[in-house]
Length: 120
Image 1 (tube, helix red, strand yellow):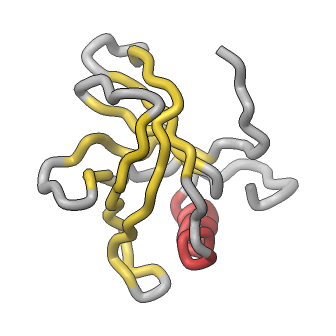
Image 2 (cartoon, helix red, strand yellow):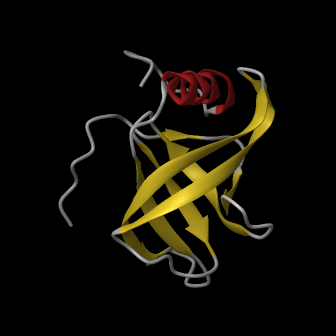
């Protein structure tokens, strides 16, 4: 699989829940994130090459919100090391400046601490 990622993935200390925009059941949890995309872990495989309207619950209020909604394209899906789960890579579609600020805040405050040459 060809990797087109330009930014280093950041692993969150929380598995933030992600839902389809108008659904009550999460489709997965964020494992890692950049300002360009994220990887979710889920119990079911997620269809690839599909645009999803998603909603992510934040661990605290950020930029005045406890959740954000955004569009993302599912780029790949594969079985996790644990065969009961699947990992899916999503690319954010035209994230707003507010979305970027929220993701940067998540990276600064809620990612495992690593030596940082750059924020992301």
